[in-house]
Length: 278
Image (cartoon, rainbow, N blue to C red; front, side, top):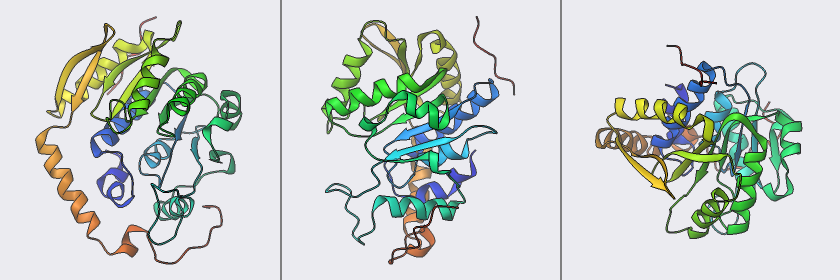
């Protein structure tokens, strides 16, 4: 398992569950073993909780693109007055994650296009989408991710079927039903939808099922407009174990979680897997 998941994951503020984090880690490693190369990207980085999984998965020649406005708003107001950009850079330094200038895009994702992403980091093999939750923002981000995606890559959409954000689900479903859309779901958790090219669906589904059943998680078949995919939920044993870990991490002194009460220096942070059948 990625060493970041053993402790540091719980010390970075964010909303990604450890269950999805372990899925990220597994799928990224499986891609590398299968010879699927390319960069990683995330829209909506916040403090970096899930992004650091993508950054740590980089192999030689790969990069990780962080896209966020990196400013607080009414929802993400920091009680200490430090913006998300400050927190993110703090965590980069604390965790030893170095990013080049081209790997950080501070701005709205709607000001990006696929050509700019490719210019910065090349084709993306794993794209996490967790940006704006309004219909138009989600629709734009899904098209953007698909346009920048490696032919064998994965797009992960956050808050799918979350009743707090109904426009997210509506935008994703409408986008999936667009004519000639090559992507389809192969897996969903209680908060995220995992998509790939239809030609790779059985490949990713088989490996995801192997991981989920091995961990004694709930796994069921479901479908969306007759397009079948797996639905998964974390098993009770793991849920209790990681809840305990999270509580321990939250009780650490603030300075050990990388959250000082004064603003820091803002200088830049310094088994064989079978291939898809032809």
